[in-house]
Length: 153
Image (tube, rainbow, N blue to C red; front, side, top):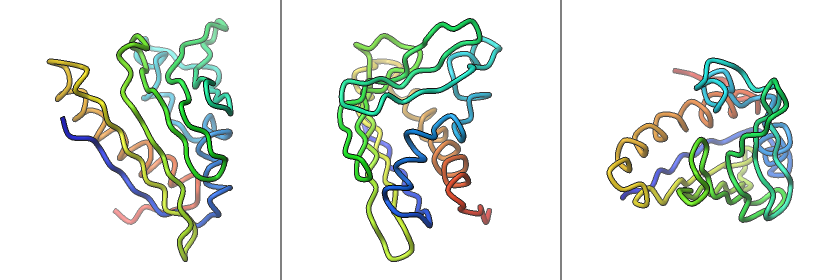
């Protein structure tokens, strides 16, 4: 099963781009459409990234309950974030997300790779297609917009 690759250039240092992606995730992630609570007709009250290998990304519901999205498998501040990604699924069904932050002349190139869909069996193709368009919105519009990139299309 083919993996997904998305790239966006942002006019920030790698350290600033990484901080926005991780520590400031609640300020740009579209929780109204891309969260567990949204799938149930609500909104989470917060979105948290625990900044270390073994940490989690999780949303906190209005009633205080936590719903885990991912486990952090790689944390290189300003350089790389690796995730076992399982939003709304059992952790045993996790796919893999790797986000790299590379300095370029105009700021930082952010490369996101999402792989491991083969483990989803008959749901793999549909899930991959859903994430392919989802990452265009989440990374290409929401994250890039928070970083100061103006969409031209």
